[in-house]
Image 1 (tube, protein in one colour):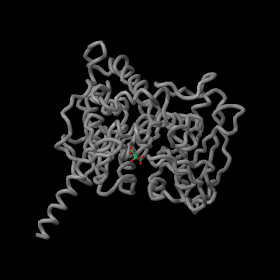
Image 2 (spheres, rainbow, N blue to C red):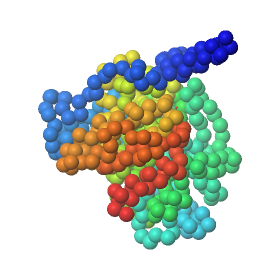
Image 3 (tube, protein in one colour):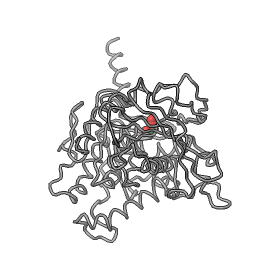
Length: 429
Ligand code: GCU
């Protein structure tokens, strides 16, 4: 009897973990319950023209798709502001025990507003002479959290949303190096790359219901108090910051700015993909566990859904994206099209086996369904390098790359090993 009860208990627990309903809406972890869906057509234009060449993709279809992502999902961002300045406020060639040169750059976005800035932290390997390629990524908790290095100022900005509301904290010394395990700095420098990072909170602090913080207000028209429904949400603001970082890198002789891989984890992985789609100066784009609104196909509704993300994080996407909360099939785009916008540049998508919230299979499928666009640029293009979703810890790659690693939602040394290997191959190193 007791055994039977225990079995019933286990079965109930299993059902609960497969499908669950909460105040924020239902989510599903059961592959059998993924709805049947049809993806929007990549290679047919809005007017019904079949897109069969790279030239037509670039001229007709790519701009159409880009505009849909811009107006319906991430929101349009302005360009480079006039009067933006860069100032190296600290540097040392004796960083990290003499292994690296550290440079910290203050970017002031507009004249006469000293509060509107972001700080770029750069490490370049001392063993390499001349300009080096680099990995660029936004960080979650302040530049001081990336590396345990006392020369990095603790960020004065610090507001994080936990999805339920606002969590306010003040950053402190205690957070120094707190996220170092996510940045593999030794491996990056040893492989001859720079590590370049910026705190996402310098661009827009991550909480809902306030359109006065962050850089958006710098661009409001007279009387405007929040972005219009097709103007930038926070992810688009963060991506804009990556482009402004690239503006600086183009001026730095220590960096080979034509060889920058933009990388991001989770919400910042969504950001890396949108940055790579919006700014073709990024040579490689890497999405680590980016999930819903990143690499995962929205129509699968596996793990986090459009409704759920728009409810927990309404500030991440533009106002128009909310239209699709209850009708994801009406979205004129899906995330394979975002990956396709990166073509012909290499893109790498990574998942983690326990990160079901991010829908690992859906992340792989986006890369897979982007392949026809890569094939327009190169006859017989290798795509993602696998016909089927590969096994755990079995990275695959062609012009794109993919792996699903053991473990949870995170960035690990293993992930970085794959990214370095992939970048080496594409940069001919
Ligand atoms: C939440 C959110 C995800 C996001 C993640 C993160 O889990 O639902 O969409 O990717 O936070 O950024 O860590």
